[in-house]
Image (cartoon, rainbow, N blue to C red; front, side, top):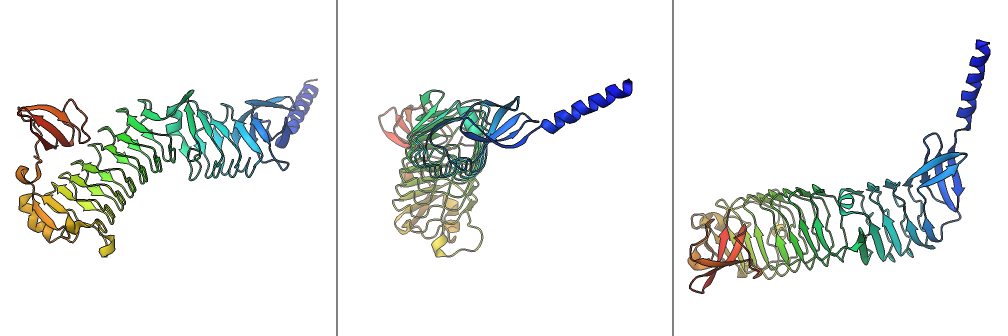
Length: 414
């Protein structure tokens, strides 16, 4: 009898195993790759195509098993020009490579906070996309976004938590703004950061052409490559005093900047970091700079004055020719370089700097700038370089009004 019971149990187990399914199946017009043993399903490409408004459910039933829809596969909606909109459930954690590429007539999509990664070219060339919805900004900042995957370059309205995002505050729940997080979003006007943020990833604000103001707190120690590339409206920039390096092309093409202050902590400025900042007139460089990259300030054609507090003249590394010097095509032969008096001869003999039309000593009489960290006791008001009142002097250049009514610039090295 015991032997018969054992054989019967074996047959039941064998029967259950045999009924497990793994493969493709179409349910309610959507094609899935289903694994009933894992109770999971992935949306996949359908030969007959998708049209109109597609609503992907959280779960589906197949052969008596409830399966969670957990991902959208590679090329799932590739070239679906008949697709108008897609609704993605909060169970989806991954959107695959080229998932919505060339869905050129899709006008609306949502990406829930459950999604942790967008595969390469996930939303590439979705040129009609008008509205993108997301749940919260923390999840968006933490998402892994592949090259050409972000839909933001195409959208007119980015709705986060039910509100259109134009003025962005990165919350305390974020420590790093992920690579490509806001790449190409032209609707963004300003961004500020909580003190929890320590890093901004590569291309994070690349091509945000409507961005006017970016204030980086002192907690930020890392700025990614091309993080603010071609933010052509950026005119109000505050750099973190915690930065050690400004990487390649970080602010390349920020053509609305007129004044730039590099903190003392910065030891290296990367290749083309500020190339084509065509309206910069004055650059203030702190005492820590040692390395300046090729073409770092190329084509800053309005440049009139550079103030540099580095005692030893910063060098350029590696092989270079005249056309790759940091100030190439910036007409520095008509500009003035202000440096520590004892360092004038050093700068005059350095190929990076000797092209300036005038190299003079940093003195308050000549420049109107004092290298000091204290506030004169006759100062009655302090302003930013943009003329806005501030409570106290910030790192870099400030404008102060004296009790006698005169004003002057003060360089604060705190």
